Image (tube, rainbow, N blue to C red; front, side):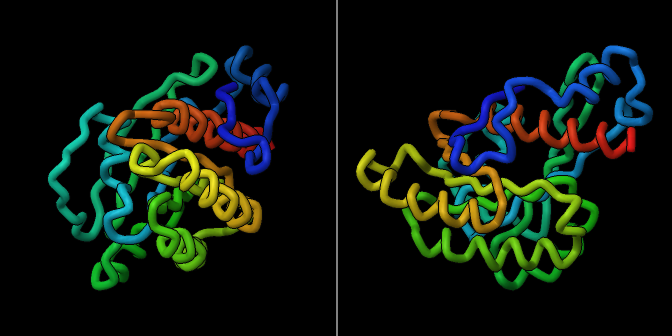
Length: 211
């Protein structure tokens, strides 16, 4: 099972998939999960790095020229988890206030919500609570997996980062979200983060299917 980033703010720290999930995959009893697409919505303030995060993972690129997302964009990424094909549909939503009403119509039916903030901007961390509240209006809180992601780690000194990390861990625990810190510029933790998202959403999809 892909490792978490911080044990203090992890959805679980088990080293392996849930035994029920592992045996269902082995016996090919995963029902429709093999054809499943998990919808992941990525929310957060303007220019915190949502698009760069998705592009680093899906296209392995980093574009220094900033262009705000208008409305929403989405990318599909295919995985194979325990031998079962599984896709993540990553919805990149606009951080600008004027596009909020367009973007929020795409929040519905998410399996996971990724709330992004900039580790160099404490205000963007404070705003994550409101982003989460908006996204949860369109989703059943008991059915959605939450991730709090600090971006632009490369721009932060270790001392600055450790200060904001304390606050971020508190916010993540309060939200019951798993915490990660990444750099889309260097690629640090980006792949590990998305593999973790895929594994956790896959596990919950299979468990829901078997219930």
